[in-house]
Length: 211
Ligand code: AP5
Ligand code: MG
Ligand code: ZN
Image (cartoon, rainbow, N blue to C red):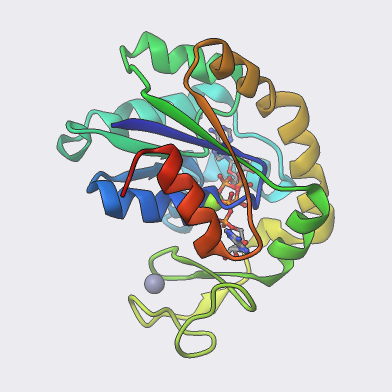
């Protein structure tokens, strides 16, 4: 299965892509995660990407497409993968096709903007492995500590309210047109995001035919 998770910032792409990937035993390829790791490691790509991410703007297509091309060529992507946060522009979607990738399903998670701003203020991410939590909806077993790797949970740099608002505008203008793009191909499934992550997971799994 080759799947794309589409949705506004904070809609739950990362959360639900990780759960579906576990169920389908395929890797998740999150361009946001790859870019944040590049920034942590101060690689040349990370240095270029940092100012765009901090501002809540998109990183230029050629940088992101290069990263995805490299990642999808890895052995573990042979039997399928879930793309989280890519493509984010029509140009990126076309680049994916040019790589010969045939997508089976696009899951679009829809969440109203007011809910998103509230979700982002409670989001915490692991400084070690990047796993996502929430102070109310998805708490770690021990406050401030990752269940999986024991490292400290931190607030993401681009989760400040002003930056979140800018990310939502960028989504509307540059990424939302992909809904129509994949709708026309007949592979789009829209899922209404629920208050409880587990309720959204059920809808996502149903849309992917996972029991
Ligand atoms: P990226 O990391 O992809 O961020 P995003 O799209 O803004 O999305 P988020 O990760 O903020 O949200 P999410 O949908 O994954 O939600 P989550 O599961 O965390 O991109 C970051 C930046 O990198 C971009 O701004 C851009 O600069 C750059 N970039 C990345 N890809 C790019 C590309 N292809 N092209 C160009 N630039 C690119 O959930 C949110 C929170 O809500 C969590 O805390 C979660 O626990 C909580 N929550 C509460 N209730 C629920 C519920 N019912 N379901 C799910 N989660 C819930
Ligand atoms: Mg994410
Ligand atoms: Zn961790």
